[in-house]
Image 1 (cartoon, rainbow, N blue to C red):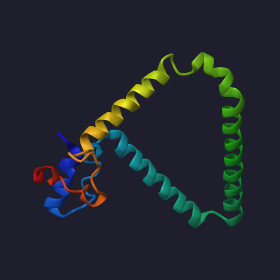
Image 2: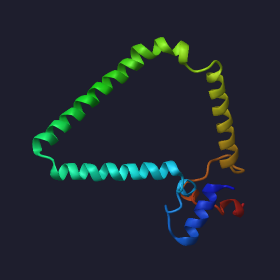
Image 3: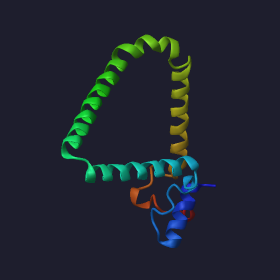
Image 4: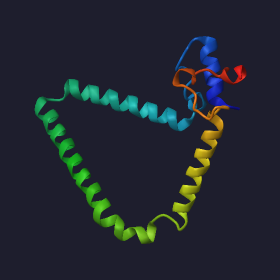
Length: 137
């Protein structure tokens, strides 16, 4: 079905906006695992901030900053020097640019066909949330 339309109907019916967003992925194992990992990380960070001595906290902050700086420099050099040498070997397959243009053209055509009415204009922003707008015409 048309999930965005269904979500809007459910939100309007139950008056609970935002609750149904991402409902398809709620029970996905990866999502659950990542949430638990994030909670665990926050717990340990909180415990560290409470119980670690100040010199250790300062040293960890400095290390994070320095590692971040090294990572930034590496990414910059990767894009500038390393990837251009590796791109012919591992790069995008032939015809990828043509496929990307074709997909963009198709998406634009679908968007124009789906969002335009008889006048050829897009709907106003304040009517986008309404799913019964098509029924009025």
